[in-house]
Amino acid sequence: MTDYYAQTNTSMGIKAISYSEINTHGFDSDFIAKTVMSTAVAAGILCASNPIDILSKQEFVESVSDNRTLDTNRQDLALLAKIREKALYPDNWDGNDAKAVDKKTINDAENFIRRLLGQAYIIHSPIISLAADGEINFLWVLEDFRFDLGFYGDQTFSYYGKASSGQEFISDEMDISEGLPEAIVNFIRK
Amino acid sequence: MAHQYTLNCEKIKHNFSPGVVEDEEQLLRLLYVPEHVVNDVVIETAIPLDDLKSRGLSLDRMTFAKKEIIQERMDKQMIKDPVKRQEASLAKFCCSDIRSIVDPDTGDRKNLVIDDAMEANIAHASIFSHKEMGKGALRKQRTVLLEYLQDRYCLDALFD
Image 1: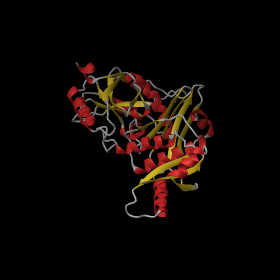
Image 2: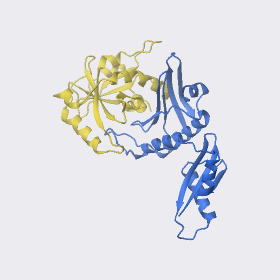
Image 3: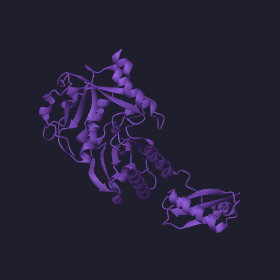
Image 4: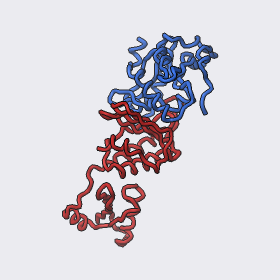
């Protein structure tokens, strides 16, 4: 059995996945490397727009010993997993005609969080929940800021937040691609 | 699409209804953990924006509520268990608290509480946003409403 690793340098540091292959079918290393890479990109673990290296276990160990350490926080993966968990709720999960979260809403929430982590590097993790109208909601309850932001699968998000100073932030509709205003990012950046 | 209710609708008795919702009535909102409650605090998703805008935030009027009806609703949902639902509870608050929330600039009422009785549940009532507004403003409105949903009870404590 050979372990292969795919890794890439992103704005969040070096990220990697491992992939174990029992090569009973005689696949060549090039085929395995492509499989590792496509799996990593499809799973959203690595970004296709960044250079991706496929390494053998030995090469990977060497890269670590050269101080090319992994980002062990993996906040992005933890948040993406929480978002996808919301897809498990069926229609009528609350007994009052609740809508299930649809795939577009999941995609919007994921795209938002990827962009936000690109903007802010590491953030205070939001409470991720769902509402009966199909919303995926991110809620930050911080010492000096409470921020309610949500998605409905139309490639936009809306929010309302209030700082302890009394300053309010409100938007009915913002395009996912715009990201959050820097003033808000400053509150939720860790 | 926004609802068509007005302040006058608070004075209309619907079919199957025991009467209009009075200011002094106690109202109940069914909540689930973990979807609506985190660290023992009721969070924003307990009040869906679409409910405020058009569907109506479902409530039970305590005076007319039947324990068995609420219990049945709880039981059905506890069976559905996508992420190990832990408990259900009921927020209790006074109708007048909701009706007295006003826009600080205009003095206009922010919410309507209407009798929304159904054949299967004559105690059913609903909260609607009084005015049509965007999602950001609805989010602000629900943060205000949330304050009144923090006082929670188990079903037995309210009906035994």
